[in-house]
Image (cartoon, rainbow over the protein chains, first blue to last red):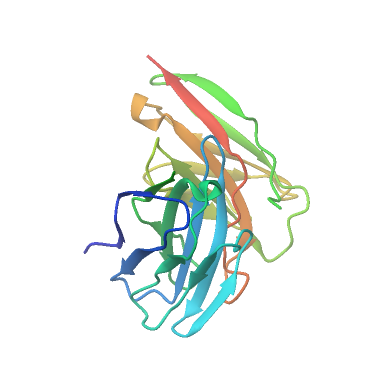
Length: 111
Length: 113
C-alpha cells in the first residue's frame, strides 16, 4: 500500500517555465489537497478537491491550476514559474472525516 | 486564518512526558481538535483527534478541557525522534468544502538527551 505518491522529489525550474507536480493515492480517498510550505513557515492550502471533477481554491491559489479527472490523481500545474513559487509542495488525501495522509513532498526551486 | 494558538517552541528531556498546549477559544460545537506533527522535511503525520472526551492511542493522549476552549497533547515518554513541529488544528469532522486542514505555525518541540 503506497499511500500518497508525489513526483518528482526535486526540481529546478527557470523563471517562466511550466511544470506539473504529480500526486497519486491508492486509498480510494475522495478528498485531495495541495499545500505549499515556505522555509520556517506552516503549510498553506493551494487547492483542494472533494471528488473527481470537483476542485476549489484554497488560501493561496494564484499561479497554480489543478484538475481531478480520476479519484486517484490530482496534478498541480505551474504555468509561468516565478521565484516566489520556490517552496516545498505537499499533496495529501483523506477519507470521510478522518486524518490526512501526506506525501513526502516535492522541493521546487525557481531560478 | 488558523483558529488555534500554540507556543512557538518547547523543550523536553528525553524519557519525560511532553505536554503541548493549544488554545482554541472560538471552537464550534461541531469542530474536532486534530493534532499533526512534522518531522524535518517530511510530510505532516496524523497523531490523534477528539471532540470532547479524552483520547489515547499508541502515539499520544489528548486531553480536552470541559469547556473545549483548550487542549493538551501528551507524549508520555518523549524520545529524540519526537523532535518535530506539532500542529493543533480545529475543523468539522465531516466532508465537503469544510473538510480541509488549515495549518498555523505550530510548536517546535525539541527533545533533549
